[in-house]
Image 1 (cartoon, rainbow, N blue to C red):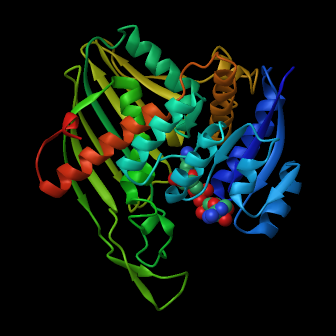
Image 2 (image 1 turned 90 degrees about the horizontal axis):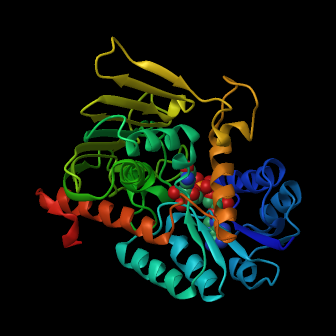
Length: 371
Ligand code: NAD
């Protein structure tokens, strides 16, 4: 079997999630490649060395360019703050390496556009970390929609809210910088836009309102020095889908009580499907004529679930979704990919987010084709 060398950049929240996912994918799936954990890079060299040893990577680099130049690395996984996705992905593509980049793809549509074109020219596999789509329950929702079980889709009402910035004393981080990140819409809303597109299709028109509620935050935990914040804390929007369905999306990182509330209700002429990532093993289904919602529970009848557990009700978690994302990526590298978000599809998400920002700034409906 051919081996595939993994190079991972970043050792934070997502760096660890990717490392777990590569390790778990080797353990759980029969993959067409022998995955080798070739190299790990982080700007903090000591941390790179410590994590490489703990997570099973053969080499550690303090300079990410060395990881890209490492001849043992075939696939570059990027889990750094958003503004670093562009230079790192472009360098990896220039070296002819496959790229698995965290979301959102970039911090500007111009960068996202250059990235998708570079990926096209390099002719390599690319994927972006819209992991929530790899939930077997979301695949089931997509199948039910495609099979017409809900009838004609007329409405998508979606929300992705968390509360990790709800306290005005929550300090500044790279997520608060326009040029490094892009606010709640980039951080959370991008997942929701990707989900809406995955389940209902292209969006043709948007109207939006966004707000920065806390215009200053402490420069670091407990600091008395304040930094100005210009990114959105919350955004609310109306969507018109190309297939005629109407929609709403909202996203906030200030909404007390919500920890990972990527949720939606999709209604058609024959029924409604409802989902909440905080209960990711469930879908709620209402069929016209019935008395109430049925609760559909994930179980081993779904292959993505059976890979982890033969028993119903034992439940998948976030890290299993990441593992399923890695499995699809590895299959794509063997020419058997199915449902992953590549740079082209992630550029479409950026285009939609850009349309929302323009609509909010100019207080008008915006045709996505204007962007
Ligand atoms: P984090 O701050 O926890 O980790 C960032 C890592 O990047 C750190 O290890 C840091 O040392 C490293 N880094 C920074 N600059 C570097 C450089 N120049 N060279 C090498 N390493 C460098 O951030 P995070 O929460 O892991 O977020 C990282 C990315 O993952 C972001 O793009 C974010 O949007 C995305 N993310 C995705 C999900 C998801 O569900 N898919 C969830 C959280 C974050």
